[in-house]
Image (tube, rainbow, N blue to C red; front, side, top):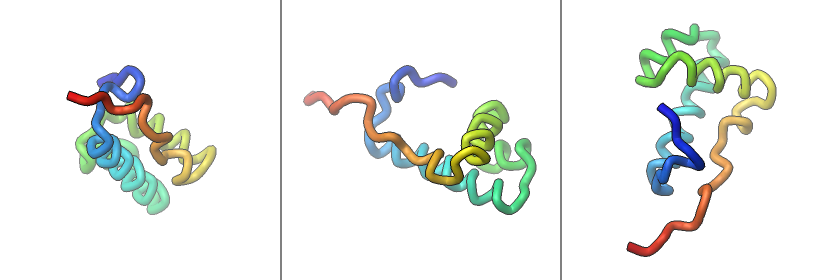
Amino acid sequence: MRYAHGGGLTPKQQEKREWVRLEAAERFARGEKTEAVARELRVTSRSVRRWRRLWEEGGADALRSKGPASVERLS
């Protein structure tokens, strides 16, 4: 699933997605396989491979949210 510019996720949803990525980082550090991480976190293997590559290059900080793509609009 693709999210253009944050996909219109609310800050709460962005926080949850960040938690999933950081949980994946902990599992990478324990040496868990990509497919197992994807299955347990209920995400695609493709996402986990991308996150693992980022984690290998920059650690858990590389998986942290960069903040909202835009300011929330009033409803």
